Image (cartoon, rainbow, N blue to C red; front, side, top):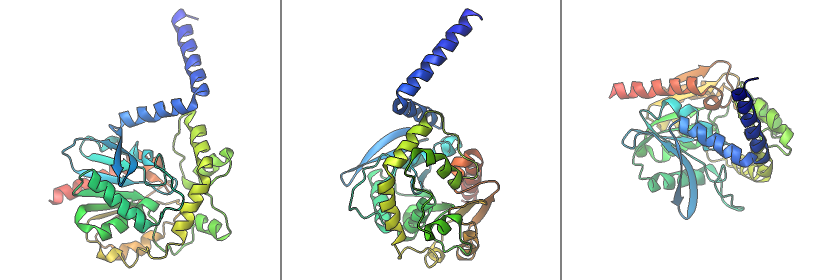
Length: 312
């Protein structure tokens, strides 16, 4: 074996050893690299005394897109999705209160109404007058509530497998919840792969050793996630069906056909309530299309936004 090849192997072995010894540091580096590739920077803002962590990238004078993650998610659910958007849009993706690197406060109100108003405070802190708003799952539900409450701020609404709809067909998730189970909350790290497989039809690539770090975080946050989930389950005043007809902005409804968490039949309820909406059902895709198929999902979203620009 040539000397250069031996040196390369030794360097790789040393790097693997460092990653195994310092998995948290290695995970931070891996996420930083992905953010850089997508033109995003990690930033913080202070909103009502609380520190918000968020990703921000793209031309500062470009149209703004704000993206809200789902339950148990964080700002990096949008990192790969943003890769083809930051060249022409300013993309902002925050950790919602109670998730990601945000503080977790026992006794806080994590209902969607309270979260909606906190997002308004975040937008004000960043001086965002008007923006395109999108969200996945819980974040999509929140985005729709935000659009209904603050219509003058929202230029368009993108709903990716959103919550808030009484779907005609019961999903595997709600079947499990009715039995007292919750597939999205794990108590052991070895259940992390099972949770990923449940939430996605095509499991997103997670670099080693980030998977073990994320699994451990999910376990550590399980009690708090259960607290937030129970809050959301008891929140009876946020059904979207009565509100959607009031939304007049352009809307994109995008869903994965194999969503086991919120059934795709939700779309049948939403179509007549949002007649202006463009609807995309993605094949071979589950509950988190922006993470499962980031480039393809971003193509659909970019086409939607470009059509709006042409319309003006």
